[in-house]
Image 1 (tube, protein in one colour):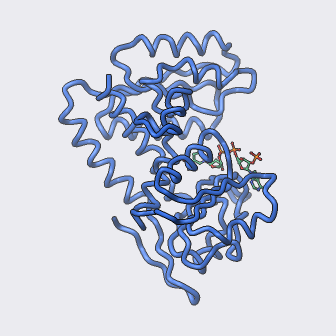
Image 2 (cartoon, rainbow, N blue to C red):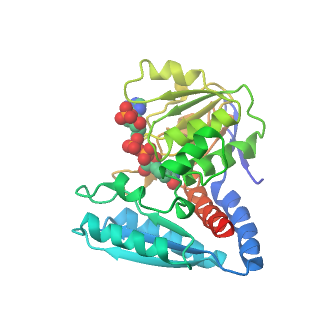
Image 3 (cartoon, protein in one colour):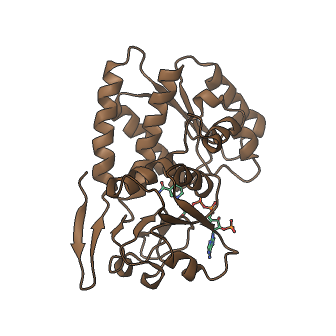
Length: 288
Ligand code: NDP
């Protein structure tokens, strides 16, 4: 895979280019779709007008079109009730042209997002968040795996395929990312530490990591001194700075002086999330 090397006085970090890796995989996925008799269909449900969510949904639909996947969008107003959102999910569950359903998160606070997610037919659950798919992941059975951790693993394995025995530290324990990421790395025989807001001496914990993954939502929290020289660093965070630019949870400028390989923000994990959504939609269509 195409990863660029950046030299600093201290070390030569490989920049893991998520855009290039995502484009390679998306090309392969388009070829797969071309060969399919029934074209995969993805439905995206967006509740409210969250600007970031609107951009994510637009990008997902654009990527679907490019790959030959049909997409449908259901937009509901911010004040939509639980029953109204549930009715959309039910309609897509019953629609044979739709193989994947994605409820764009976060939903407005008055809605019970977990109850809504669990209404999605697990076969169409391309976000991998229903109990059946989470259970499959923990049990080691084939299922639909959440997109961002799935993408992060591909990036890690673009640097080193066999992860057996490596120490992996994940900062963050969300159901969307941290917990499934831990399961994926356990399945790759890593020794996994899951850190969170109550972890003591986080810097010391991170210094033990051969693979360090930050999914926190705190701009530039992870400093060079936290990173074991040569470690693979995956930055999942997306934070908007005061100047309007995006940055990750890792202090990238410092971190490249210690990391062996690192993902940039933007252009690292983000493009892989969309790619794995396409992958899951195709897989869901093939299984139905
Ligand atoms: P959540 O807010 O659900 O989880 C954040 C986690 O970080 C929690 O487990 C929390 O701990 C932990 N945390 C918060 N503060 C600290 C701290 N000071 N020290 C250690 N741990 C801390 O976020 P998500 O997992 O959904 O997302 C994390 C980041 O990743 C966000 O910036 C989000 O925008 C980004 N993201 C990017 C995606 C992409 O495609 N690139 C996709 C999904 C998310 P606790 O549990 O104790 O509260």
